[in-house]
Length: 204
Image (spheres, rainbow, N blue to C red):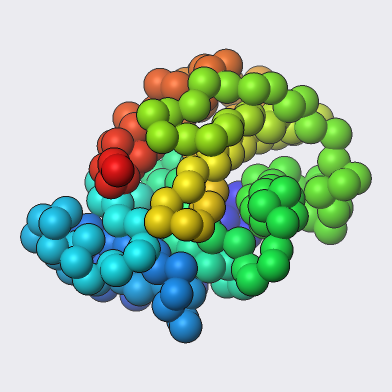
């Protein structure tokens, strides 16, 4: 957990500045890869976003810039869990982006795999139900000696581009009850902040 807390501290100022946001968006064509803006309504946010996808940041998370990703990372303020959203880099296969996301998230919690590449990780991969408008969804489960990590990744197309979004959490072996509220079920469901997040995506 030490690495997670270091990340929390590093982005504390950013999270405080972003705490008042109502809607935020990521734009495919933005040179900076993402733009965070305050909007009172989704209609107003959509106007500012242009071709980008809009969404509401749920309560209880700390939004932060996601280094080397065209996206946003939102860490739970109290628990080892979080939400993410990202577009692929130019000409980057979507599967490569998913692998990069897993490589970033797993070492935050599974300290025995800090330097492991995604291809070296043994994941238990299962299909999970998509949300309305999604193209595909899978859950990745890592079972270590001390920690278990789950990562749900969803694909969605919007205005000619495809992005991924998802949820992740960790539970300590022997202390599974402590993670009951943040551990999604085998269908990727049961996490209120994550449901609040994806349900604010615009519909065609």
